[in-house]
Image 1: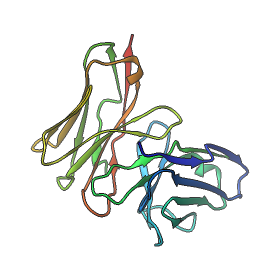
Image 2: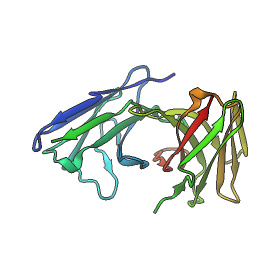
Image 3: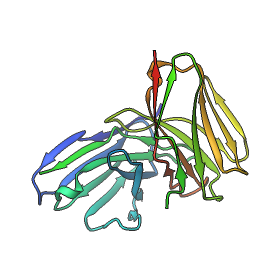
Image 4: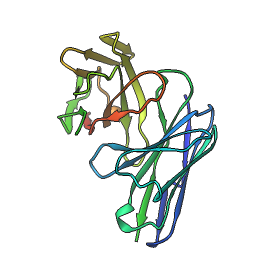
Length: 116
Length: 113
């Protein structure tokens, strides 16, 4: 099946630093990539949707200047959490979808971000 | 506003018996539904989906039933196996074009050997 690789899987950093998370589709071209955030015992909350070569579409309440998304190629999207603070600590998951209608999203294994 | 709801946060089933996970949605525009399985510290894995033009889709031990009038779907796993123990997310979307998926809150399934 389709494979989506997310890196790093776990990161701990000091408050005020920026953290970049990569999401790669390994065996298919991802025309659309999604970034989710999951709090403990809660559902996956969509943060933004990005299409290759265009600006990301952010969900209501998500700060686009805080969470920078770049989808420079059909196999790579990055999420940068800028000037991270403890409240940004969470589990971030990316997913990718090809160009066929009704093709399900395939998820990466997530990144556990802990801001001290 | 939670448009996709899984009212049972957890479910325990004996190995070999049937597991039934339920999901309700409120947005009548949704026309494509998916089930994902998730282990701790991993991303969700796609299990099975169903289009609104069908009322049943089967794949091996997994069957999804859709009742559009009730805005309800369910996932049946039979026979249940200990390896099925995970959190199951129901998801709904609009087919075609921009596919924003809305997830339920998940049901933790425990299959007891």
